[in-house]
Image 1: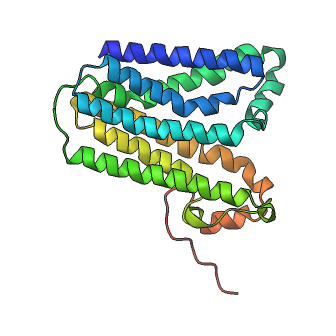
Image 2: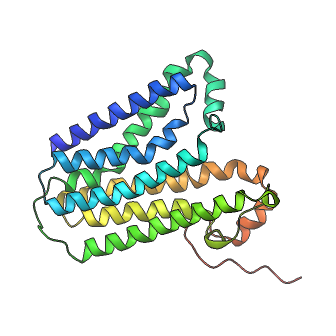
Image 3: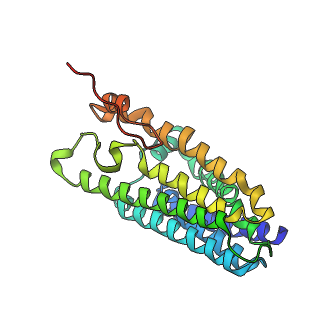
Length: 262
């Protein structure tokens, strides 16, 4: 088990340090967002190679993480490349001035590397388990939950991209498709993906101890870097967003509340 955990930590460190060095050349720390999904794929691949547990489970988890992570990184690369550094990192750069190059190593890249290692613990721990040497109902449920999450995330991102591509929607609130039922279908998708991955891993005893992974991801999505951070400023940038909040669930999908009659 220690070999998998250490190898994964080393792989993450290599990826994040390399990304940090590239960010210095580009003067763009926001490339870390693009690497986020791909970094998990590196961890899953490392666990699959170094781990000596049930082969089919290791490679199933590699597949689940790989599809999710590569899709996310590809989408963010398509969306972000050529648009300059994200405003969050610009604010950090302005705050720290000439020291930002070093501070970003720890506050941006190292921090995200640590979170990546923690969130992926179900994948790492289950890679060391020989038993059970078959898949059961929990794994089937996990793949189903993962599929729901991947579809929510993929469809939500596609719907939002299509909406933003139309000039007449500039400054308007996206409240159609999946966005009619939750203000953040993409974040809800991430939530389902990682709980699904945990369920597959939880068929093994070591994998169950990795429950901290989806718990941390859920906390990040709902309370830290996901919903909470985005909605601090979006109301100022999108007229009508306050009314959208009143009728639409923040995270878990549900039918929108009906507007009171005049």
